[in-house]
Length: 273
Image (cartoon, rainbow, N blue to C red; front, side, top):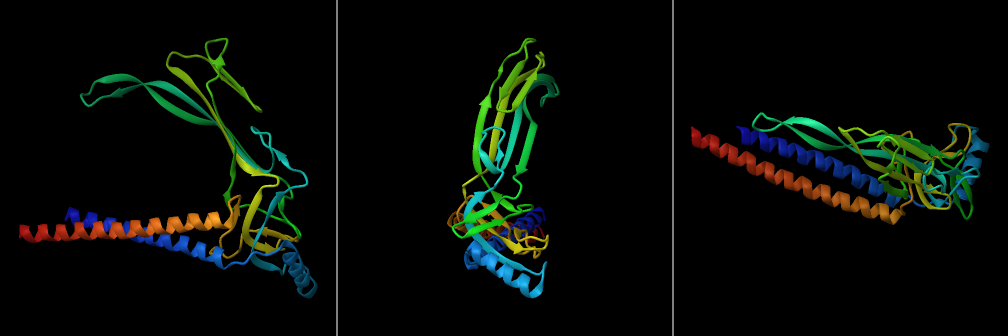
């Protein structure tokens, strides 16, 4: 009976993989079927709708391609790069002594590696958007699928402090910790990702004036994707294609294994009768 239940569980996993595959394939189809709009065309359509139907009436699912732009860009914490968006993180890696019981019931003291995030910061520049050869359109990236580029990555062990601890200073961060016989700092891992001003962007979303001004934001229809990406459309399509293939293979493999387990389980039950 256990084999039959196990086989059914594996088969259910296959169904889940097939559903996920379908969603990825659907997203790929949307990217493939949506034509690229020039910013000036989106603006002209908006003005036409505004003149004929009034405000809060325009909605147009589209993709735009251009460069990330902001009149007042941000300076990222670590790379100090001019960005329309950045997300920085500092992770403290350390060791602590822990008493653990072994298989014989005896307690042993071991050093155990651990980590904790000690600082996080994410920001979007005000009024940022996409600029192509024909104009500019603002973007509200809230709840979007974001693909960024790495701006900074570094690991610092730190220098001995006055009390046997460690002090670390890099960029806008300064951290330190005192020494302890049961606690050892390994170091601090710094990472930052973002979208630099001038980076090529692919944006797929809903151009609308629901908030009073023309902007690209998350579609009301939850089935429509909302993507803000430093990857090109071809790169996104390639990634989705690979994911669809992988999930499809995984689903068929799960169904095959599940079927074998169910058959073996049934044969064992019949043989035990």
